[in-house]
Amino acid sequence: MLLYRTSALAVQQSLSLLINVDFRARIPSRHIYYYRSSQHNDRWILSFAFIFESSDPVQFAYCIPYTYGQLQTWLNELESRKYTFFHRDLLTQTVQRRRIDLITIDGSPDSFQGSKKMVFLTARVHPGESPSSHVMHGIIEFLVSKDDRAQKLRKVYCFKIIPMLNPDGVYLGNYRCSLMGHDLNRMWRNPSDWAHPSIYAVKSLLTQYDNNPQAQTVIYVDLHAHSQKPNCFLYGNVSMTAVSRYSNLSILECFRWKRSQLPVNCGFRIYSPSSQRIIHLNSLNSIRTSRKQELEEDEALGEAFCRALLNFYEADCGLREVHLERPFKTFLPARAQKSLKKQARKVIQTVMMK
Image (cartoon, rainbow, N blue to C red):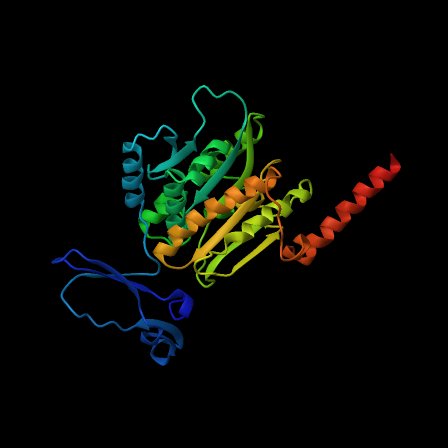
């Protein structure tokens, strides 16, 4: 753990039993020590100092927690609100029989017939990346709100959401792996329906949607968190068959928050085939967002994502012009730029032959 870095300081929470106050704070970097110990065969030692000012219980964590039980309690509360546009289904169960919830948020009337664009969201494939759950919390709370922008999003998109992909790992306190010791984000190519039930079920569902002409999956966003990088950044797939759409996708760079003006770094890459980010679905644009910050800002980022998604919809429909500060190709690494140029030459040759 990188607690000694200023961007990843440990969290301490004091629970006052007398006045019922929930207080969270970062441990100051000057109280964190990382050093080699001659008494431990020159191994690295990580320690921190903390002064207990009262007899109240104090909890320590790498990031502000978001537990499986907390998620279930919140989803139960959302169900109790009886929203007509909110539906909760059991997609599958984990190895230890915990729920993999599939949330559908869709403002279309029951009598609606026809196709509708779909946005697919997942989070918490890595248990230790709890900020992703807080961002997802903010996304869902905004989408079910009475905000005019949320109502418009529910009309134009059908949202399919998996809030927690790895609840066994979350429950057990793992940082990256599942109960079976697997990094589920590396199991997308050949998932096992027994060892990786959540990945198997989600991939099957995405493939089913992709093969259904009535289900137009326009974007897939997988929420993560980073142990060192602050603020928000996006990674997107490069698809040789849908190059023109990435200029519109780049509007998601508008994640800059007007109130705090936090910087955003975005990019499009060619990823390892074993990762979720390169599932070969024809109409799927996959973006990974990452975040390392505080609780309130994490949830606010969820709302900011929804606003950016509405901007993307308007740009995709020609209702808004996209003005990028730099050309799209600058988002790409050199390898991807070469692939795009090669693809362009093939297109030109095909046209000339006709």
